[in-house]
Length: 515
Image 1 (tube, rainbow, N blue to C red):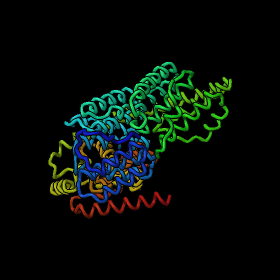
Image 2: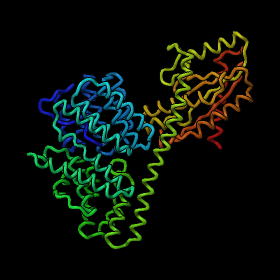
Image 3: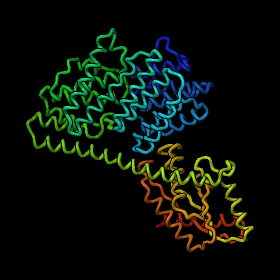
């Protein structure tokens, strides 16, 4: 992941406390472990909400650079809670840009794209041109690049540079070579090696101009040097002399996992170029680099194809290239699936908005899902009782919902609840009433419906939840529901009927576990 900001000389900042500035400096120098520890200390000790927010955002950036997946969900939740109390557009944009990367690492394309859109919208209304805004655009560009939206990445990168220029920030901090190198490599994976070479030559030309400036290596962020180095090595292995010292670019004492991975990939390229393809193949057998933050899963088989080609084994090279192409096609198919799922979710959201419009009073509406809340539920059933209406009441509970919050964070848990609310709005009949009771419990009221009919409706709801593609939202964490039903006869109070339905739901859960 990119650095979350850069040191400047006299450039305007929203907050310029020495400790936060030191975290920024450590990140730029590639000392992510130290930056993470200092940011956590600042957040724990400070009483200034702005300083706490900035520290938590930079801690999140440091954890990304360290590739510490297990700590990311909690860090996202902490940063989200901080920006809710400090909703400055620049900070909101910065948060969503970083959260997009976390979602991508988590394998959730839908959450990733959602965060990117929210980041872009927040940054679009930021009034100041300063380092915080430039850094947020900078990180958003990288988010686009990770997921393979290269056109958006390039446009967002240009926006980051424009903001940096307006804020009089050092331009070398916003070169973002990784975006162009990732674009080049993606072209090569799809078979457009000539296009790859053209882009890499542009990258090396930018590098050469930077190296002509005084003290260029010291001023260049560590991660940028590593991407420049890999771009040069990748150009060389394709048979084109880069004209720069690759070894010098890849020198680093930083702690970032991405830089280390780039060094290992570059070593493979140099082994092939230097006539040691067997050594390159041996390295590739044990190489484990973070695909999500480098060049995707296709890069290893593509380098394997180049090594086999250097050995003169055309058949093995062809097989490895087919593997690389298949992995690239799989990623493209995943993006298409995301588009379809996104349209479905939008339709659900529009249906939900129509439901909310019927219950416009905020005091009667659950703010997270937009559904009627418990108070509205009570008013609705009281009206039914006064009219002598009968029906069925169902208690719907998400199964093992704690696992969603534990693995993906409470922000992702909220998105699951919102999606469930949208599905319920879509599946339930027009005359039915759906409310969020609290936590992960929903209540379904079906006027004029017998328990047998209610059970059929419940089966339809369970099936709709089961067939939803939850993997795009919370990968590797199943989402399912259990529903219990009871009669609502107009004489029995809601509390009693709800208790009966709740017991029926718990019995159904126990039966499912026993089965």
